[in-house]
Image 1 (cartoon, helix red, strand yellow):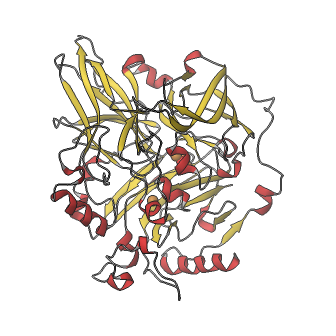
Image 2 (cartoon, rainbow, N blue to C red):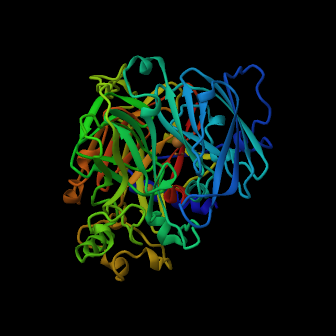
Image 3 (cartoon, rainbow, N blue to C red):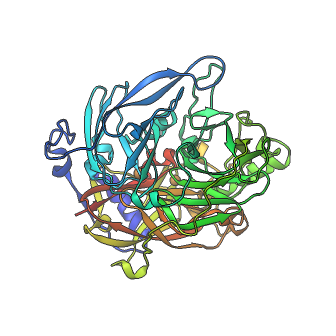
Length: 567
Ligand code: C2O
Ligand code: CU
Ligand code: CU
């Protein structure tokens, strides 16, 4: 164990420009107590909302015909609070929608009734460590944990999902996820679409076998590339068609997929307008030819069907793009497309994607049919309320950004040269409570070194059989495996100060670059190969351990996760 840590450390020091990094362990803090779980409600915490959550292994009808599908599902019951706090999605594996109001005090009793360990994380909510679903709180079958937190977030869209280390990807895949909305006074003052005009748009990809059962991937090769499903589900259902009136809607798009990145766009070329990203409204609406949506990200879409005649139909696509996968795989994928296979054939039909729908292939996501003409519609606001812009002046480490270096060593996607460790942090992962930090997210491709006697896993060899010797041509080591990673930071939302691309793969980059929304608050940011992204992140209100990780869930489970210690 010690040896492994030392090896990692040496590698990190070699590869990183950020100097010495000491390790701090918290053996006492976390594990001396018998259990960090909260089993009794805190009497002094007066909750406005109380919910009972249970996760179960169940069968639900997902596909329209044939057998029910075995899934893992969250069930919730409102014990206290406004009725509209929970909205059930019928016939579905997704958990209920939770609608919060800023300032509410929330208590959640969660009991894991599945046959395997699990814990819930509220992705996007700014909550204390013991209510954040850190994997150290993972519940065995039959165990419970009580979450207690105040809703500190402004209006926006978040979501919840399981977060037990090594099991996150498969459990989210099997169904353990749900949507969260938060509203506040500021938002209520805006004339935004509400009620039946404010709808969830959770996008996920799944693969079913002939018995309607979910197929997940196995093996290291697949996990390094991430899971890509063959069918697109929206709000937990295939072949989704929305009947809409000729007016404006708010669709809360959530990428709840494990690895698939969507390039959202209309079939008729109409641009897309966004009013929110991740857990917050944008400063003002943004209109783009298309929008990129990576796993973990949310975009609140303003879809305006005003003026569209009854009977008209629009299809939302994931448009073709390139550059998200390692170069060799991209070559293969695009080669296949030109020879007429795969998804290159104009998109195919929803729910009937070919068995190998690559990352970046085109396919349909959902259809919108205008079925009723109405004359009134909210008008797109010019601005969306209060917004504080962070700049370099707000951070206290302008010249010494905290690094998040992405690397893909054979079978080990890592951050800052290390894999996840439950009770350790590096020196620069320690952050003072109340500070705002500059963080630099970049691809850290040191020369890929093979230890003596170590060889590449066959599945991992993307150089076409030539092994390590094929990596010349100016592609330094890990560059060969360079791919897109959606990096997620727990806790408070951050802002993007800059996004730069260097060097290779510029042509591919052109197919995605107009789809990034970097002007608002974010908690997940897609980092394309060659990109370097600088963010400013506040670390306020709560002490403790807060994760940061790749939201490609296969990568996360492979250890592409670290944590900050706020003190
Ligand atoms: Cu949505 Cu730590 O994740
Ligand atoms: Cu999160
Ligand atoms: Cu990743």
